[in-house]
Length: 402
Ligand SMILES: *Cc1c(COP(=O)(O)O)cnc(C)c1O
Image 1 (cartoon, protein in one colour):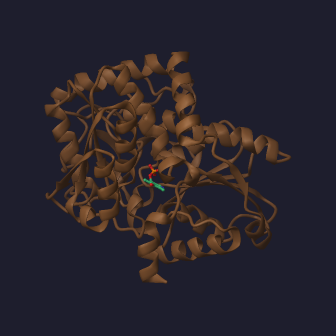
Image 2: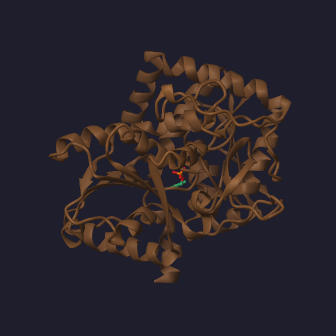
């Protein structure tokens, strides 16, 4: 859980393939050789309790209905599937956009956060503790806390606090406490370490609200399940939109990998090619090596001494130096592949989408489009792209670049 990557104490356990891809990883929380729960003794009990509570809640139709109701009335789900007509014509493919940018608070993060907040309520917790990078997950957490009458404490690197002043104000307006983190590189990695450290002291009253498919078991599984709504909806929507029912390609951007995991979960049992697109400077799947950080064994950017390297991306939501364990597993099985694009390609993609479809996407989401624009997809293909968020938060950054 600290910043030093530690070696696993026991041999990695092979995944139980019988459970099927993107199913329940079981009590060890393993995806092949990745995943697990590498936390201090003081958090083992809490993680187990959350796992038990989640497993029971997810099997309880009342919990599912309550969450589905909230997603409909508060988030605006189902989000539309928008055919990108002009861009499709230019590219010679059929491009469909899954519009998470239209979800309340402007990205897919709210799907997961409402699930975790509802679970916290069910468990009798009164507080949420979270990390945030650019502030999107923090804003979503503050929103859910306000909605449920929970107290929210959000840890944010000092550098991000300065860079994302608007989101800091937004969180405070929603009633959350924002704690600037002054250690290390003063960004997301350090905010996560600090938030988990803080959780140890308040574990009986607080639920840790993880922002992506990362962290100790059950978080990677639980967050993927809460984001599965993206893929499930898109699967139904594609069935009525496409003659073949299933697209040839399913493409999503990958930071930690939650919007991609939620999207892939809806198509993993089909013949669709699953493609995760990372930022060149924050490519955990492409450039990472095995290690343990923030309670999970996965791939992380690190130097020869096992020190975590800093990630850099034009999109603040993609500069976590690792990737969720299930993505590593999907890649090793050959079920999904992971590619990278450059910042320059991303800026070009934002402008292209804005001018052909009238949609300003988040810089994160534009990574997925940037890969599609490379033209490696054969003409005539059908492509589903998850637009993870809207670009309002990036306007001032873009203004300096364009
Ligand atoms: C946070 C964020 C991401 C990256 O997170 P994942 O867990 O990889 O989905 C992508 N897009 C947007 C809009 C975000 O806010």
